[in-house]
Image (cartoon, one colour):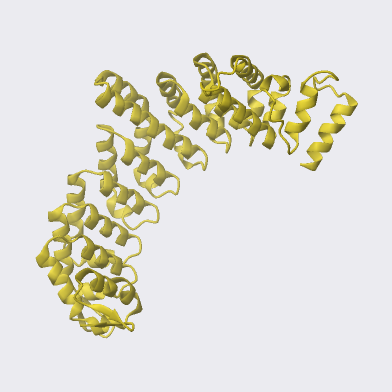
Length: 415
């Protein structure tokens, strides 16, 4: 900051070719904006000719942003608001490439998308559309694209999204571009939902769905790979959360087709969990079938990632699905390291991951008979459970607090 102060003063004394004059108001305001201090009475007219340079300074960018916010508030009714807005827009557009890749300058373009006139937004939107590929892969450029998706008129947003066709996978694999694809899915899906449910216009809903189809198609063609990718899994989750029919069913069908590979994957399990939360009854039924028999529920519950999926099935399943899973736990047995046969519920309670499944079953089981069975099995093995640190902190305490029949005293359960 000290260097910036000295540079500003030096330019003022030398009369460098920056558009300032001895009597001009800009010469008295620029140094304050480029330094640590802001002239509270400054207007954007006083920085005429310096908008781009000041936009790329941390304090200068903040000053312009705050001034644009102030001018946009109807309560202030500033007489020079249009003139100030036009000034910033004109100078910003003349050097737009300098701003949209800049750490501070990009915020000025975002503010113009927020507060600009419809004509300004249209012109700025056209420039973003022309460079959307390079912008989307840049850390600051992708923020401008995301703001454009939020602020531009619906038709222009659909046009912007269409530019991703044929390039969807590279964008998803990019640490910046994946955010643009996620935003596109959210915005366009909301447009389609509003058209269908709010405006009762199926033709308009179809228009928006068609603009999103290229993204949907490319993702479905590589559903397994993207669901198991650190950025791809985020995109697939946004699809499950926001897409409407018929796109949502296509996405869920593709996920379920790969469920065996996703359920215990580092990233795929998150996609799978989201599908259980936002999916269809038929999806849960198909998954439930794979859990039944062969101690599958127990084995999956004892795996770090797959245990999350079992928990989600218990939490989000209907009464039949929940009862079926809990009964499978009650009917199953395990063999410990000494060759002794244990109730699966007891073995799960002493496992680092499966104990959370038991706790979830205790919390969400509504069937009183099954609930009594769960508590009965655990209570009958109290000595083993209390001696196990994992169980004591998760399941045993749950018994005490849930039944009000047992209580903790001096670190032990007492009947």
